[in-house]
Image 1 (tube, rainbow, N blue to C red):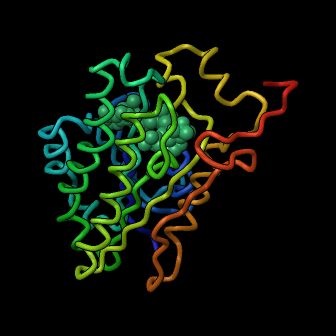
Image 2 (image 1 turned 135 degrees about the horizontal axis):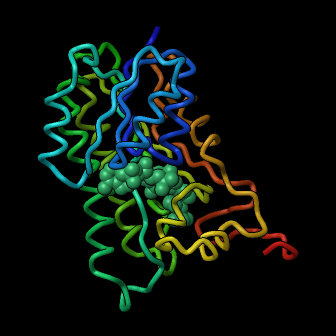
Length: 254
Ligand code: NDP
Ligand code: 8X3
């Protein structure tokens, strides 16, 4: 049966791939991101979806998040599935050389943004028969690596919040899952290196990274289990990656 699925960060990468995949299954989608034109273009291309509603807001702006939910058309309630995917890394500097604005942006987006969206989505999730929250964490949420410091801390917070949500929402029957991907080739590194395409390409040199489709595939698996089953935590890496810092690269291409 068609479900109503809200996806944050749907304008690129994993979020866009998940929107395309869940649209193909005939679901009703609420797609979110800051880049409004990208949302509109994506919505137009999701012809298989039952219906698509665009919500353009910055997850860091609490009032904007609340307004977007206040304006949600009645057809989109209840929300069966919330996918907290919006997020970013900025920089690879060690702490001593880190940019304080970057730290604020990562913490405000990855931690506080996820909290705001979850809090305002809850009343709509509570009306669903089998509500499910899927948080996109990272292997950086259980490991750290030099230069990862604040990004890793923000994803450790996503891990902690996923576990806290699973405990606290248990009596209400809200399932909570987390997917923790390793290296995946999306706009992520271009954002991290502030538009430096050469540095971004180096991240994936000499190895086959995950694609956004691979992560969407994992999300579909997690969200399509029988109702009594919850995949709590799913770590997915490329075959060439053992952990956050051990990556096997083909030396000819690296
Ligand atoms: P992309 O850069 O391709 O996509 C990020 C998405 O997040 C965009 O749609 C962007 O939309 C949205 N976003 C960023 N900041 C905000 C904001 N302040 N308000 C609203 N939306 C925002 O990256 P990925 O698809 O790779 O990343 C998705 C998630 O997966 C992130 O949480 C990331 O940390 C995580 N992740 C990524 C990995 C990777 O290697 N790629 C590995 C593990 C986890 P817009 O700019 O339009 O607002
Ligand atoms: C993104 C994966 O290894 O770049 O979350 O931190 S990593």
